[in-house]
Length: 326
Image (cartoon, rainbow, N blue to C red; front, side, top):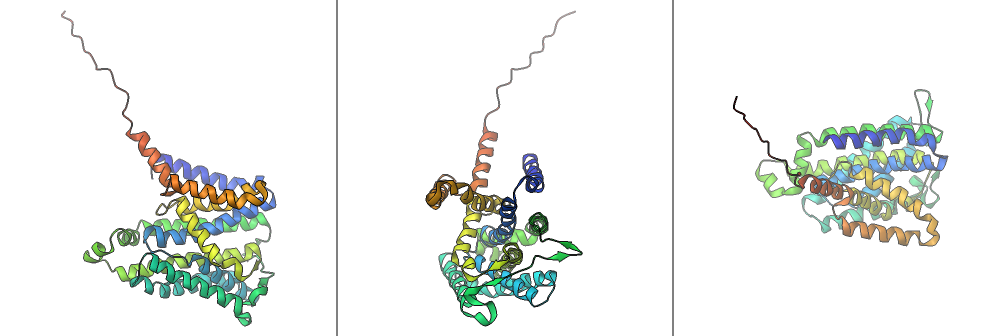
């Protein structure tokens, strides 16, 4: 990361810390939702942007994590334990879901994950003995950690921002480890990666499992944030929305999910002044954005920066040295 990128990250971090002190409770709720969805989008970016595996199941994993935390906390289990269990459960399910990716690719894999999302939605809606069906689960309490209650909007935002920071830093470290380079090799040319001795089977499964685990952890934060969950919240639309966040922000860019989630959460709210037309305006804005910058906003910024750096520097006048005889 160059100096300009470091300055941008530091400035964004300062804004993220200071902004809630100037917002109303609903504004704090929105930026809390941004932190939660960013975690889920980071997981999808790992699966899609780095490992090149198309997945439409991320919303389903958010739902699995949310229901896991809601059911366990209401059964008396402490929130930290339920949080870890949500991540582990989604890790195992994501590992199993990764097996079809060993045999099918691209749009075929998208159909497999689409079927999985539909299956999860049907289970959440119809298995009332476990999920309460269409009635959902309400009264989900926000956690108390070491005597610190996150019941207030600002406190929960600080908690979710801290979780985002830890998980993003862990993902950053992983992507700069041999695992991250293996994921990129898997995306660029799996046959060449296999010929170089890379265990493509294992890394494909790991990409799905880790990305799904981040989706489950996002769900573990989503449940206490909204304090009421029901099956339609985790239908296919959420998976499409998360996919939109990754693509708009910039697939394969580490900070792409941060930017994409910010656009997906805030832009619809800003467009509500158009009343019933805001969804049309939102869809048109996304279509224009994708037409102008198919590599996402960060891809557009990168191309603009390269164009500026490629400009020829202004000509420098030749240095003349005059020698005078004594």
